Length: 487
Image (cartoon, rainbow, N blue to C red; front, side, top):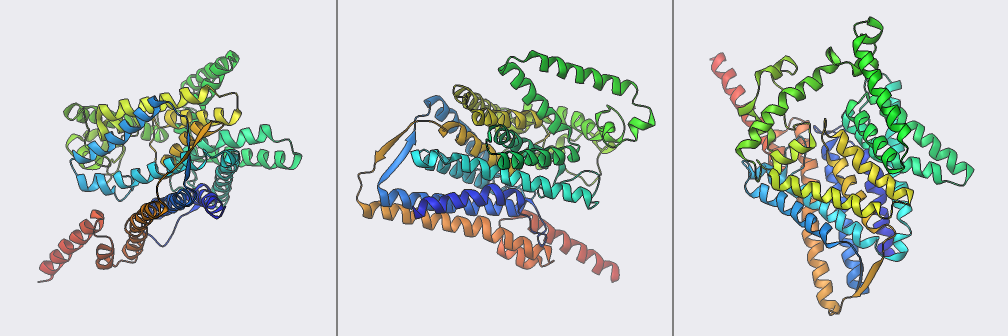
């Protein structure tokens, strides 16, 4: 009982704490705290799960198609293989400073996924999956409220909430919205119905305040999917009407009441608001050129910024600053291929397809449909955007939810001596404890030193972070140049 309650508490803090946490005393205010919290909590959940299994000598495993596990293994192998053959194995292994999504972080996503599969396969816990969904919804509602407060506080035209970037906030809320909406529709109690209705309002308001076109594309994809699934073809006609309205808006877009309007100008195919889209159209051909040179295993996770320099189209500087760098292709398919190659793309698309196929067989339950909508919405939005830690963590947890929710599980007895099981559990505890120390605690502490301007302490605390070393080298060069100028 202690282990189960503790594990549920871990999920509570992941689903609510992960989107909300940021530490203003760090240099990397948003992404690094989320990465550190994810690694710490996913490790603790797995440790508690292993000890629970060792003590009870039983484990529950769901019946999941072998095809899913095949693609799961292929995805894992593609990330490992692309890291081995990476143009910068160090960055691919530890992750870039700005994104924190190398092989190390990927393995903690897998750890969280497997923990969710095993823990919620137990019949009593499977019935409590609604709690997991509610935690997800609470996190989204609180994040939306914070974003709305930002807008009211005059933080800028587009809110970024506790996620740190407008499009990332919008797509995170898009992933959560289907679950909140289902809770609103299914609630039979008047008070809870009002609560979830207000939650839907807060999330949709925050999404609108991001002015994210990627999010709108994801929302349209969800609408198209639902229209086809429920055979409500009138919805498709309405979506077609929206596209005609978009064309009309661009025809009359030169009028100042449209071009000067913050919201309406986001739908114009010209002007300052369209520059970010134009940047993508310049970047994508260069990325395709890159892929042609390393098509099978890619350049390695997190290495686009290094590899892209040789392929930069000078036109990009019409839209971006000279000191800017491109570390994502802003297209899910291109990002996967350039990082993990065609092998990685086939594995990834296969995993998505088989997951949705399995889920749709029990889609009579609205929560299952909400999970499918969440995956579809994120994938469509990422045709012009990319995922960060919060999206990856939710993606793997939603996939696990779709697989185990209302799925039959088999109880297996573990016929090993308890001494052996305790030794194995102890070994996992030591390894994951070291993982927390080296990949969660030390990077956050080092970044605190870095934000304080103490590069020596930062590099000593986290010597694996190349960004600190580069900053130290740059400072040294600048100091030498100043000394030479003075002399």
